[in-house]
Length: 256
Image (tube, rainbow, N blue to C red; front, side, top):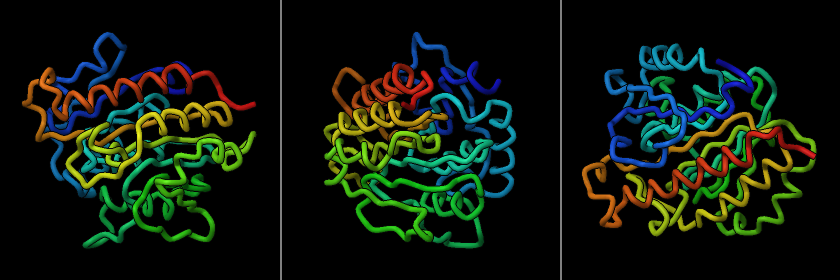
């Protein structure tokens, strides 16, 4: 399914089993992709795994909200954006730039997928990186970094996004948030969840949103009781809020 009929779909990419105890998707129509049997996917995605994953999602198109498991699998954003069939821009919330050189070969990785997307996807015109702790190469003006402090000025996003720019694909790594908002298996920033939610709502007012994804689960927390207020509980609440903002604000066409 592609296009508008798929725009409201929630897709769970289950690499580690971390979503088994979560509640955010319950009661919502969703598609569950059990990917635990795909070999060569943790942090680095080997060529065979990349081909297999691309084949699994190809029929779905880029629309909808996709939950990608932990940040180790953030490279799946590159696979979803490869399915976009028009010129677009990418808005990424992340504590890291995800523009590292691969440690060996040209392998797709969670730490270098943004760079790989810029190098290989001619339809990707610009990347907005919101919240990284370090600067990123600008790729000839195609990358705009917004510091964590600058993220807080939501009004400035009105000028950044304009009124009739290219459609956006949005990617959220919860490691951009403080540990009061989410618990991930990576080092984290101090951004507030509400800041990202407000920016996403504003983006949906200014641009058409193609699709969105969310990562930053912590598989180490999967066995903990959600009622104890542990990481799984925090992540579940954050995922629910992000799903709601997408389903309510981002599926109506956007733009002014």
